Length: 84
Image (cartoon, rainbow, N blue to C red):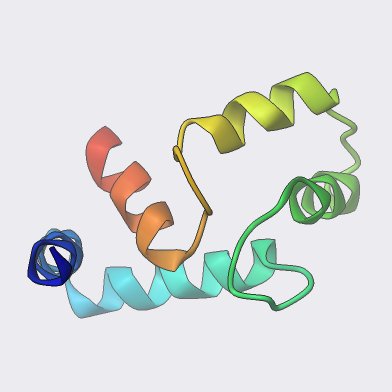
């Protein structure tokens, strides 16, 4: 089972070139306000606040629910990969 997870992870990284992965990492680091390796609702609130926005908790929850688990860097790449 671990090999399957590793294979999925390597597939995600192979969808992008190294420069794109670095740009996504920088964006992820901006979102991960508390630097715990995951993007939480509080992290998203802080990012939106810095942009002068105040989305409702339900909107933020819907965004996080798309990930079906903790939103770490690999999850972010997967979500972007599904949309590009």
